[in-house]
Structure formats: structure tokens, C-alpha cells
Amino acid sequence: MSLLLSAVPAIFVLLWSIGFIGSRMGAPYADPLTFLVLRYALALAILAVSMLLIRPTRHLTMRERGHAAIVGVLIHSVYLGSVFWSIDNGLPAGVAALIAGLQLLVTAMFA
Image 1 (cartoon, rainbow, N blue to C red):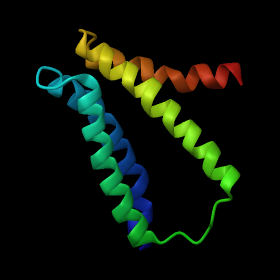
Image 2 (image 1 turned 90 degrees about the horizontal axis):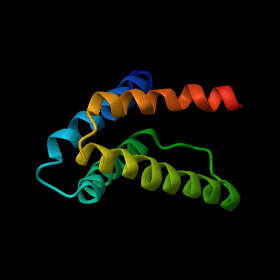
Image 3 (image 1 turned 180 degrees about the vertical axis):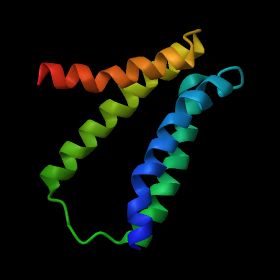
Image 4 (image 1 turned 45 degrees about the vertical axis):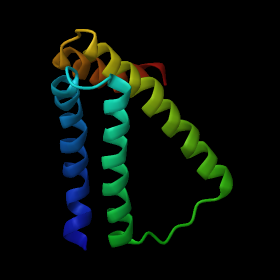
């Protein structure tokens, strides 16, 4: 189990970075928001299996769940929806990935 837990960051980075390439490859075949829903379904399946394997012991309060839900909706609908829409409208995937990477620096700068 500790091997699985130590691999989680690498798996996360791999799956996150593939999203930009996948969105560019899928753009000619599906609407960006449809493609994003398919990505969410895959992510949900991966998360569900990992939660069954790891079985976390900490239980969140309703307030913490609400905050997590709001952040999740904002990140995935506004941020990723905008990225997928931009890539579908011609923005190179590499530029989208650079802008997304700069998001952390800008957040740290304002913090």
C-alpha cells in the first residue's frame, strides 16, 4: 500500500499533463465540453477505485465537503472548461499548458 501511496503524485502529474495533449487530439472529434465530461467520467472511475483501495480514515465535515465541492466546480468548470474551449478554438496545447502552469506562480505572487 505504501508503494501505491508513493506513486500517487507521479500518477497525478501524468494524468494532468496528458489532459492538454488529449484535449488537442480530441478537439476535431467532440465538442470541448463533451470531451471534458468524458474526462471527468474517467477521473471519477480512477478516483473511486483508488478510494476503495486506500480507504481513507478521515471524515470531512459538511462544511469541508461544501468548500471542496465549490472549489472543484470552479476548477473544473471555469478553469478546465476555458482551457478546452481555447484549445478547440486554435490555442496550441503547449501554450495552454504554460498558462496553466503560470497559474500557480500568479497565485503565490498574490498570496
